[in-house]
Length: 386
Ligand code: NAD
Ligand code: MG
Image (tube, rainbow, N blue to C red; front, side):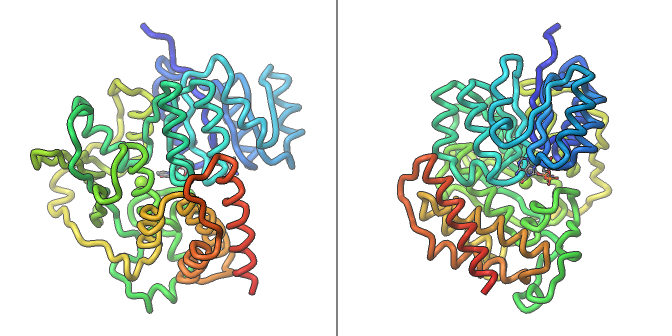
C-alpha cells in the first residue's frame, strides 16, 4: 500500500480547512497532516495541532503567537509566524500536496512558492487564479505541477473531463444557486442587510465567499478561475442559475454531448476528490435521493441587476491586471459591507470606480500584481471614506 500523502493545509481553521481535516480524519491511511496554517484563530489552530500532530504550524498574525509556540514547542512541533513564513513553509521537502484553503489575495505568494518548490496544489483559493491566473498556470506547467480544483463547479468540470482530456471542449456551463437574493430587483437589493446576505440557501461557507455568492461576484470570480484552470476563452464559459445546487456544472463537447456532475451540495466531496486524485475513495456523505428533488430548474442570470457578475466578465475581457483590480476592490468592498460601512449596491459602485481609475497594465509581472493590489486597496478605502 502507498504511504499516506503528506498534506500542507493553508487556512486550516476556515470552512474549507476544517472540512479538509474531516476528510483526512476519515482516511488516516491515505492522508497525513504535515503543515497547518491560520491567520488569527490561535485557539482552534492549537487544538488542531494537538490532534493532528503536524511537523509545523504557521500563525500569520503574531498577536497570540507566543502562547501557541510555547505549548507546541514542548510537543516537538515547529511554529512560525508572519506572511514570509507562510510562503516558506510550503517548500518543506516532505510535503506532497498543498491545499490552499485560505481566503483572498493572500493566497498568491504561498501558492507561487509551493509551485516553485514543485508541490501539487489542491486549490480552493480562487482569488489567486483570478488575480494572476496567467503567471500561476505558466509556472505550474513549467514545473510539471498539477492544480486540482476544489471549488465545486470546477471540480465538477474536472470530473466530467476524466478520460476526455484530449477532447475539445465546446463550452462549459457553471451553475450558480443565485444566492439569497435570486430574483431581486435593484431597488430590493438596495435595502438588503448584512444578516440577510450572510444567509446562503444551500452552502455554509466563510463570510467573504458568502457575501460574494449573494452579490454574484463569486460566480464572476469562478468564470475567471475556469478560464485559467481549463484553458478556455471567455466566450466558452456560460453561467446558468440552478437554485437546487444539485448539478455542480456541465461540459459540452464538440459533438454536442453534455456531461454534468451532480450530487448533494457538500464541499467535502470536491475536497476529497482533489486530495485523492486520481482515485475515488469511499465516503459516508449522505447520498442524493431523486424523490427529494423532483424538479431541477434552470434560469438565466441577471447581470444587469447583479452588476458584479457583469464587472467580472468585463474585467476578464479586458485582461491584464483588470481581474486583479476587480479582486482587490471586491475584497475591500466586502470587508466594508461586513462592517456596515457601505450598502450592498455600494460594493459594485466601488469596484466599477476602481476598474476605471486604477492604472491598467496589459502584461503585468508578479511584482505588478502586488502593486496593483495595494494601489486598488488604497483607492477603494479612500473612495469609501469620502
Ligand atoms: P474562511 O474565511 O472560512 O477561512 C479562511 C482561512 O484562511 C482561515 O483559516 C483563515 O485563518 C485563513 N486566512 C484568512 N486570511 C488570511 C491571510 N491574510 N493570510 C493567511 N491566512 C488567512 O474561508 P473559506 O470559506 O474556507 O474559503 C477559503 C477559500 O476557499 C476562499 O478562496 C473561497 O473562495 C474558497 N471556496 C470556499 C468554499 C466554501 O464552501 N467555504 C467553496 C468554494 C471555494
Ligand atoms: Mg463554487
